[in-house]
Length: 279
Image 1 (cartoon, rainbow, N blue to C red):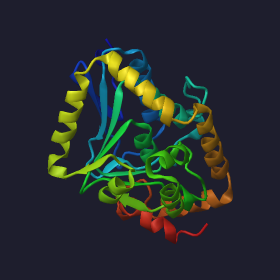
Image 2 (image 1 turned 60 degrees about the vertical axis):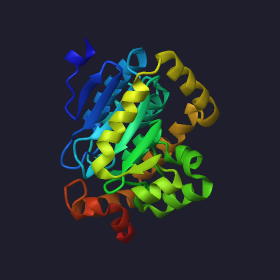
Image 3 (image 1 turned 120 degrees about the vertical axis):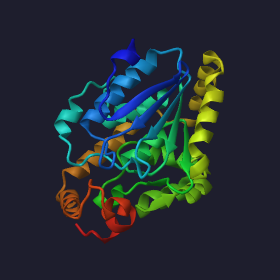
Image 4 (image 1 turned 90 degrees about the horizontal axis):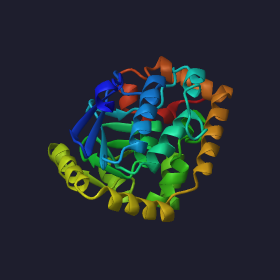
């Protein structure tokens, strides 16, 4: 049985009930998205794509300060792209596109920072709930001299509108939960002391509905609101094209020297401080 044999290293999978599963990201020091996490997410998605019992999957974090900080810029890109891709797309796009297609309802329960690819993971989920005091979202790729490569330019406009999508993607700044809620970046902000209970109650309620009805509802909503999958590789190609340029490398090196991907002031304030980096 999958739950008995699947032993991920970078998140914990828990079956709250047969219909309701939880995934808690746990990749210290700041929950970056690297090769191993992507590999494990692909394996989980493969199970969920054929599972007709699980109705709701909540993706949360074991770290209250960092949901998913961003893509691991120190990862071996070739090794990541060598992972199997069911869609044939680049590794991260394969994950986000497949996540958006699952029959189960997917919920990003955001406590802590979700920037870059972390924000894109949340955007690919069906629903985003955020801790009022802890949730922070942002797309800071513009500061790296790149466009967001995991689908944010395609998913944000439908949620927040064209003008606010420009604002978010061009500023590179952080959006705390209350503003993110106002913009439509997340469904709602919930007081942190009530957050876990709220998410659990909502997920348990929805998990009890009939699998067929959930699937049909998702199919109809996706039909009218989702871009064709073929659009998303264009974003990835643009990002990785920019990553080969000297400007991107210069920004990355400067940020690494200042403590990128370590648990320090830079990661807490990256949406603000990236504006001070000159390629």
